[in-house]
Length: 439
Ligand code: SF4
Image (cartoon, rainbow, N blue to C red):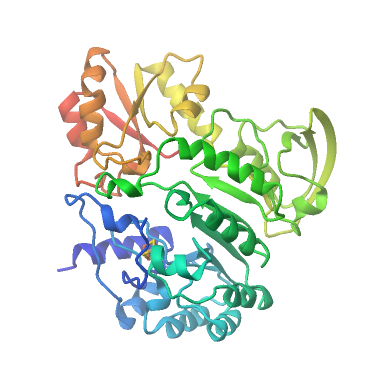
């Protein structure tokens, strides 16, 4: 009989285009989410997948889309791809099967060296998402259990070999001091990454208290990165972004990209693209990414300005926006709300945006906290049926709702949350039909 984790891996390959290799990681980052999951959450750690199994799974990948490895989208823990003893054999096989399919490798970088980067360069088209986190060798050892070696040669090799890469770092200034974060961002930006994303640190209630930052650090982090962003050329992002409106403001521009060449700058607001006003950041992003030339009307420092952006055929303008909500999803929710008495469940993170998007309608929003995980987590993907029942179940019934709309991201393909509870269980408990939205 097919094991549960095998089933999940088949789904990862076939639906999400994930080339899953291993659940083993040699690092032990203090913020690694795998360390502090509530015990009731069912996760799988099958170790290194055998080469024959991976070969078989490769047939399920879609060569028309980017394939990613090292990123988890299911309850199977995703480890460090370079830990797999057959890593290069697998990637070479992938390349021989799919010569033109872009591959994105998510890595902590601890296993990378100049020789491996040279070998990777022969397997293009590929890019790296480098979870760098810290550059100071002592701090890398202390907080990531990574090798206490300098990381510059690795960054330098990536630049020399022309492998496109982006950098990510979890901000833990409450543990390392602010200088460590500054040093990481400044040093990384010298070696040509496409962008740098800093993540707000998020811990479940199972994490020791000293790991969870004081709430005031959040605001300080925003101000700190804003100041740092003005000093470097690399686009610097903070995720999850706290968004309160749908204004399509550019958060970063890749220097050699079509948007960079067109003269677009960080902070510009897209007023229109070929005369059409984008309703949200998602719309502006999609409009700018369309192949071909387009006339942009932008607003910069209170004045309007026209730019011409010429995109190549690969449909990537190089202008970066935070992700808000697709207008079509808001329209769909509003249409449902016009026919029935609807309630929408949201995380506290997405609440202000949805509130803005649904203003003027009768639809009621129900923000729900991640109590199942606890800590300072604030994500729709980590909500559970139990969270919703405890915090909003009674109100659904009292308000005589006819339909409840839930974030689809909290359920797997079979409609189960991370605790294994089904969406139908929620429907039965409150006696109201539920439906998922994918925003
Ligand atoms: S590199 Fe990623 S998977 Fe490995 S310990 Fe760190 S956070 Fe966890």
